[in-house]
Amino acid sequence: MRIFTLFLTVILMVTSCRKFEEEKVVARAEPFVPKNLYPIERLPAYINRVAVMPCYYPDPDSTLLSFADDVFFQELSQERIFETVSIEPSFLKRAYGEARMSSSSTLPEGFLKAIEANTMANAILFVDLSSYKPYKPMSLSVRAKLVDIKSGEFHWAIDETFDTGHANVIVGASIFQEKEQVRALSQKTSGSVIQSPRSFTKYIASTVFSTLPMR
Image (tube, rainbow, N blue to C red; front, side):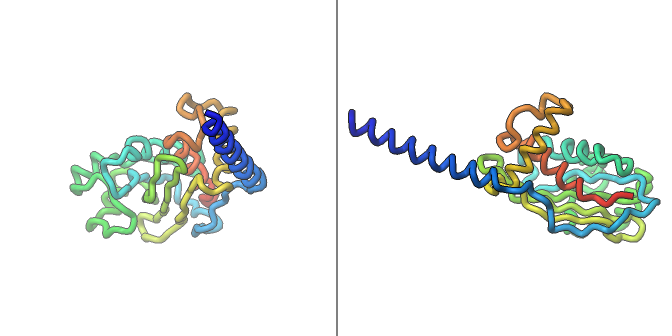
């Protein structure tokens, strides 16, 4: 019994020391700032309505897609840079046989013209998701592009991985959580951001869209 007690004490001490060291690393870290992006200085004046594609993820049955569309659309709308209109997966499925399309795939012929006619949008936003880990340490990679419907040119693009195994992501998520609690937008934002896949995705979407160029 004494040996077991001693062993348990050692384990607790090692765990406490490790946690203390992790907390010191986080305390010294700066919040995560996306760097792998292509922004222009300002959006053209005519970009006032953006069609938002449903999020693409390689596994169409992933639980990530049960909330990602809503989260990314809501966070984009909160930026209030332009009007947003959602393109539903059901529409894409009926029209093109695919509910979700990657920004890197070949688009169907006349696709952008069809989106323009159906939404009256000037640009279209693609959001590709990958490397999703819903358990600790959570992570998610996002590649997003804002494309001019008429010219096909990029007005903004970003490609980043958010990993809670990195201290700066934890700091950024904590700051986001504090702001969300102050705003009291929804019960869904309660709890730890780095323990809830939906809340973590909400932090990611907010951080990603904070890099959009202004007018």
